[in-house]
Image (cartoon, rainbow, N blue to C red; front, side, top):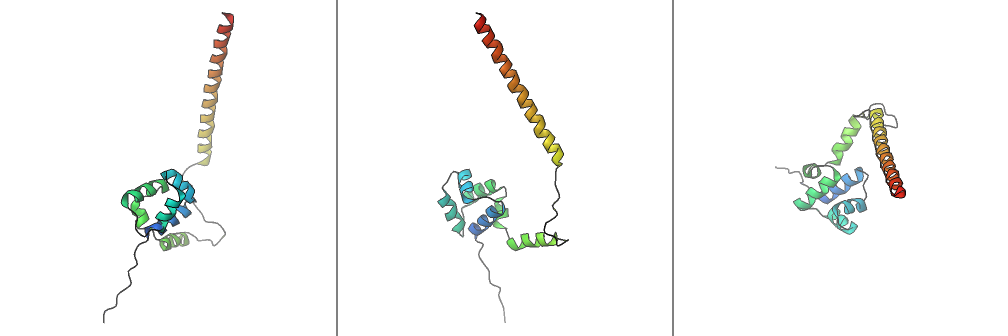
Length: 135
């Protein structure tokens, strides 16, 4: 006797919805980024099949590949989280991939440069006005 396992169709719209939610993005935001209405996003997320061109655009906004959406498996995500959850405390231990102090210093340096450019621009305006008044 042959037993078959049921095959479930991949519901791309639901996968888009879950990835969007996991990214902390609202339908309105995704709609704005794609240049469509929120109702269009709702319709996409209710669709079992999504055209490849639409899927590529959605994937780009969500910061994933179309293949990642097609292959998305929420159980796998929870397994990954569960396997990384060693101490059973209230928080997960995520490794930072950059030095926050370095990032802060970069921002401060950029702000300083911007301030100096603005200050120089104001000095040039003052000099120009002085010349106009002298004439």
